[in-house]
Amino acid sequence: MTSNPIPVHTWFPRLWAEIAPIGRDPGTGGYLRYGFTEPVRELERWFRGVAEADGAHTVVPDGNGNLIAWYGPPPEQGDAVLLGSHFDSVPHGGGYDGPLGIVSALLAVRALRAEGREFRRPVGVVAFAEEEGSRFGVPCLGSRLLTGALDPDRAAALTDRDGVTLAEAMGGRPAGARPELLDGIGAFVELHVEQGRALVDLGAPVGVASGIWPHGRWRLDFTGEANHAGTTRMADRRDPMLTYAFTVLAANKEARLRGAHATIGRVEVEPNATNAIPARVRGWLDARAADAGTLEALVEGVRAKAADRATRDGTTLTVTRESLSPLVEFDGGLVKAFREVLAEGVPVLPTAAGHDAGILAEHVPTAMLFVRNPTGVSHSPAEAAGDDDCAEGVRRLADLLAHLAAG
Ligand SMILES: [Zn+2]
Image 1 (spheres, protein in one colour):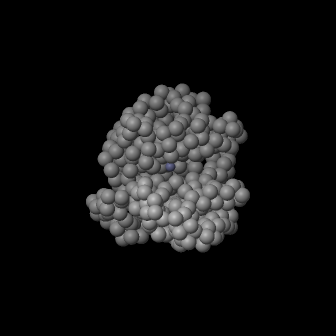
Image 2 (image 1 turned 45 degrees about the vertical axis):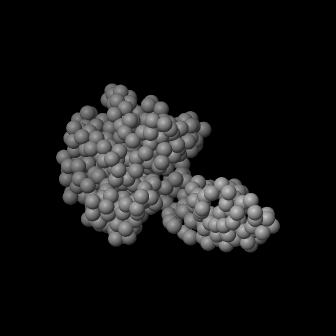
Image 3 (image 1 turned 90 degrees about the vertical axis):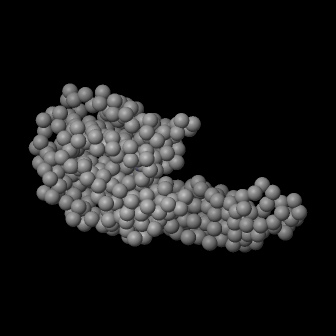
């Protein structure tokens, strides 16, 4: 299909321009698309309209905030091919992380239909809910609910920063695991903007993912003693900000020593006053590594360094694991087939970013495609992808869909 006359290169920028303004902050140029908020609802209405215009016979919510457009034979036939990604963003994130996978999936279906190809397997395009966890704190919320990895009652009680529960945001308790739906899916493919510069360095517009590094989130509570910034002698202080600051540096060093990734990107300070030594500092450690042993050693290394420093500062430290996602290896058969179909030396890359594909992979043969990101930056307005590369991603995805599902 790479040389076919289907005008994907004109379809892509046109469709992309339709969603570009939705949820964009005019100040930062970043996106504020959080799960179950109006910008995502608007994107979902747009999704429904495009899918129906392109021949979807049903566009159906799964009861967990995820929306699936179905084409070809009814999904009850089983062995469906599912494509898609998520609409939501991190605060002031880029526009490509998530929506590129949904728009590319819609256009891959459109491309095959324009060629007059019939689907012999049911084909679904999914928009997953709250993948980033930006509103309710649980990443891949929709796919975790769908697969049963997250208990629906626990999820219903999750609150956002304004105290709104997920049940209130969704208008009811989530449905939870849908085994009959999952059992009917024979393959899931998520196309995603690359969150790094590997494809830039390789000079390749598109790559295939081999797997996802194990990763997790840990909450670090540093407790000291609030006191007056002017009258408390330096020697008498129990300042948790010092322990926190040391820990940020230690996390960076421990990660570098292991070829891993560690980030403390969120912090809360009490009382958060200019003229007060803080009583408490709370930071969140995001840690990722190539294997589970390295990840465990990294987190333990950070914890030990921080605990040692806390002793010297007269503060206390507690470490609470909030989430842990194990190593994901994508389906070997799909990855091999994709390399054959895509040919031309398409590179195979691991990723350190979590995705709905990582959640689905425990239940369904799953693979991912990456599209080159010239800045290598993601979760920021600087995230980018060229129209030509995006169109190439659509063509490659259409090639794979043709291989899997078209007669
Ligand atoms: Zn994403």
